[in-house]
Length: 478
Image (cartoon, rainbow, N blue to C red; front, side, top):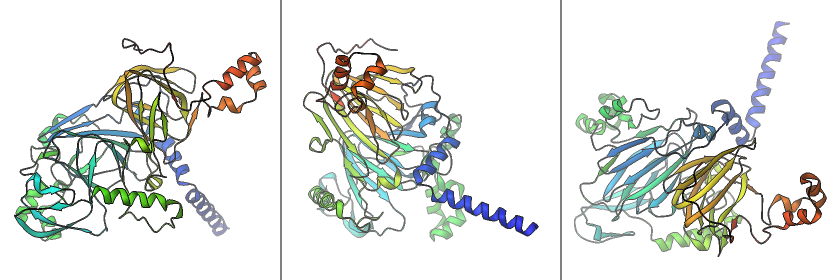
């Protein structure tokens, strides 16, 4: 009898395990979200600024506090790196997938996937800036060949997709600061630790003295991972002298971003070849059989400032560029997406809510008045936002934006690979899909009023041009 009972318990256990494993990954992610993150009971949403500022020799690293209630609700984190000319953001990896937006400047960006071949061959050289230009190497001082994985040229407006645990670095070879804003989906299935930003550096890191000063922070582990390993073991593992291991473990005061002793140049594809490759890929996208793109050859970069690729465009209101799994298939595996928008002065972004995702909004330029309501009908955000501000819009929370006198430019990071919005006005509004009689009875209005409500803004979608009475109040704050 005991054997039968035990057998029945085991069968139930395996059945439950099979049911959990058979769930859609998005369903498992939502379950994980409700058990690990805080519930989204927000009395108010606030504009957030970076809570930590780490000065390095070659730039500045700023981190938003992922413990803030809005960030915990969405399960997200954010980092902003300012890399000065001829400076290098040291190799590192993070515990969650990332979307990185290049807000300003240009430079080289490297990502290293484990197991992928070093498909690029270049020649090491002590060269000046004039000897490097988009894949061409000219001049003397050449030494032995160097093999490495692909290095990408990045510029303002680029969005870069970085899987969790992928080693990344960035070098600024331009004449102005390179500013990169990173969004981390901490509640993603690829992160099985906790809702903290964890940065593991392969060189440099925050010195121990600086760590003691910022010990109260929940993300104070931006350290060199080799520090926790024995020198003898590392020397044996790499088959290198102990002195070299000591240099690898050395905590330098230069920090997370270092000033380079000399200018560096790298072999990168020609821009024309990149554009040709992307065009040919987009043409055959509907005929993919799943073999054309592997992690080693995946497209991870897309420029969101291109007007000709705008998904929404209005001559009177502005434009919106959307980046989802259809444009970058790698996003399908990470469950993330983004959009870049530009509103003309006093134009509006339609009142809507997101059906699929939380959103983190970063203001690139200009100003706007933003209003957000929660699912109880309470106004929890009514503020003027400006460049550098960041705020979260939780899923299903209605939001409305009106640009200021100089327009409004923003980037939105989203926790879904195929996001959907439900607009309240315009020709895609749910009001247009409802019968007149239903509107009359719901709002106790006349047929003419119901018709007006149903047909309003029928020539617009999500972007509304300024009305005669619209104006931006600089003094308005909640």
